[in-house]
Every structure is written in C-alpha cells, then in structure tokens.
Image (cartoon, rainbow, N blue to C red; front, side):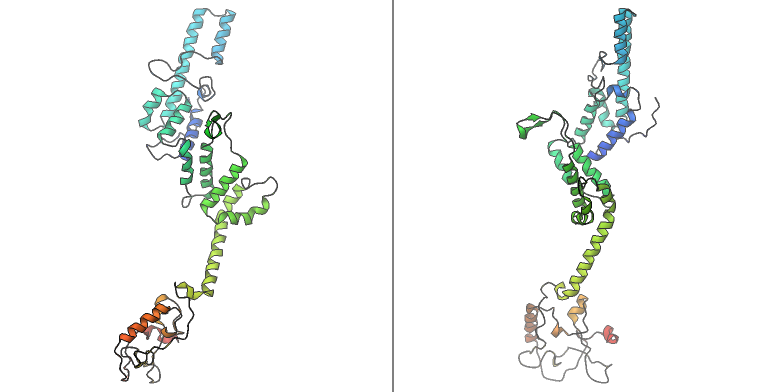
Amino acid sequence: MSLKLKQPDVLPATGVTSVSFKVWKNTTMAFIGQDNSYSLFKKGGNYGSWTALEEQDRIVEAVEGDIESDELNTKLEEGTITNHQYQLKKQKLIDTRNQQLMRIIQHVVNYVHYTEQDDIIQYCTSLEWIWSYLSKHYNIEARGVHFMKIAKIAPKPDQPHQTYYKQLRALFIDNLRKAGDIQESKNNQRLTEDEKMTPTLENTIVLWALRDIDPRLPEKVERAFGHLMTGSKTLFDLQTVIFQQIPVLLTELDEVDIKSLTLNKSNDEPSLCSGFTRPFRGRNRFTGRGRGNFRGGSQRGIGRPNTHSSGQNQTKQFCRVCKEAGRPHLNHTIGKCAYLTDRDWEDLKSVLAALEIDDSPAQLEPGWDYDEEEEGEE
C-alpha cells in the first residue's frame, strides 16, 4: 500500500486539547483512508464494529453486504462451486478481512502515545471506540461538565483572530448532542437525530469571539458592518470579512481612546492628582505665631540669593510640588498651588507653628524655592 498523504503527528502523553485532538483525528482518518479496505471498517461500513481481541479473530463471519461474500453465496446457490469449496473460500475471505482490519488498527496506533497502544489493540471494537477512548484519556470528552471548558479558552497573543474564532466554534461543534442522547430536562426524551448548528448559534459564536478578542468590538462592528446585515445576511455570513478587518478596527478604537484621554487631561488637569480638585482659594501667606511670615523671607534656611538679578536679593521661585509631579511649575509658587488640599494646608500650618521664628534679617540659603536648572528658562 502506498500512502501519499502527510503522516499524522504522534499524540503526546499529555496536553492534548479538544481542538488539537480533532485535527489529529481528521488527519489520521484521511491518512488511513488511503487504504482501499478502509471503507469496510469505518463507521457505517460492513465491518464498522468487531469483537475485542482476546483469543479469537475480531471478525468471525462474513456479513451480508460484503460483495465478495455475496458472490460466494450466489455461486453456491447456482451450484457453480461445491459446499467444500464454498467453506474454504469463505474462511479465506474472513482471514483476509481480519488482516485488513489489523492493518487499519495498526495504522492508527502508530500515531498514538505508546502507553495507550496495547489497550487499543486488545480492547477496541470500532474506530469510534478508539476516538472515544482517547477523548476520555485526555479528558476532552464532550459531555456534561466538559461543555464548561469552552469558557476557559481565550485569544492568545499574536494569534490570528479568525483562528481563535474557529477554535471556539470547533468546541461548540464537539459538544453538539448525538442521536439517542437522553434529554433529562424533557422527561428523558431521546434525540432522534444528531444536533446541528443553528443560524442563531452560529451568530452567537461570532459575537462571543468578538467580545473575547476585545469588549469594544461588538459595538464597533455594528457601526462598521451593521448596514450590511439586512434581509437574510447575518453576522455569521460576514464573519470572514469582519475577522480580517479586526486589526484595523482595533487601531481605530485605540486612536479614539487616546484622543479622548488627551482631551480630558487638558480640560481637567488638576484632576490628575486624587484629591487635588479644589481651585486656589487665595491662600498664599502663613504667619507663625504672629511673628514673621512664611513668604516674607524672615524664616531662616528658606530661599537663596539670586546673584543673577542686578544685585537684588531675590529668589527664583517655582512650585516644588508641581516640579516633582512633572507638571508646569514656573508660573506659580507653592503658596498658590491648586493641587494642595485642605489637609495639606493644615499640616503646613502645624509645621510652621512649631518652628522657631525670629525677626532678624533673613540670610537666604539654598532651599526648596530655588532651582539652578531652571535659571535660564524664564
């Protein structure tokens, strides 16, 4: 047998997800489907099920519908072969079917982790049994609580947006109910046919994926594509175009957010600091116990001679609070700073009241109200 398709990867011991298992399963089925006998043993085939391998052959008799077996039956009825010849040919056919089945099973287990190979060879009774066994082994069987695993997946960085959508959709498909499943909420009724993806569910999955990628996207998509969703055209019909345009849509959303943030900052700059929203109330002088004043320079250790101002003993004043915060600080002093709260002013009063203040002429020394780096900026 010549197999030309790419061989499936061998399943790892752990870490197999529902999506990756489905890809592996489809690849494996396509690969073994190149064997001409595969159709006999797939689901719905003449030998779609068999007995477990114990001490006997998996297939013990030829079934009705097997073309070669039916031809032998016809020949026996017509008398063209003897009963002895019929029995010999029948047994040879059964041996051939067992050999073909063993080859199909071996093709599958070659791509299963070695720890699971023996169990599959010994106990499998159909290809569906193998898929179910592996699903249970990797804890990805789509039943009951496994449906909740859909909520655990999320878009990955640098992952194509449409890839994430397809992964999400695949999980929903894996969890569709099968014919014969019991519906306990409906008096234990059994489904008469396999559940199918409805148009509403398809739209829901697209919307779910958009919200997972970015909560802003549903509203943006509505504005950008809503005019196209008329008549019978739905969100699912447009999903290919939408997911291709998501990078552009996200860029536009970010630009709007940046502009909005910049505008709010310029219109309400004092609100950048929590609690500093009160406007300046004209408080720019403090008196310590009635002797001297804070801005008058009578307090020692405050200020510094401005040797660059025509011989006058002046200070180059600025607001230290705003300078440290990275805000404009040359256009006012700390006494006129709008960012100081009532609590700040009370704390300053308490500190100044505790200082020893005299009325001798002040000798200005380097302090908080002078900054050599700012000298040349006025």
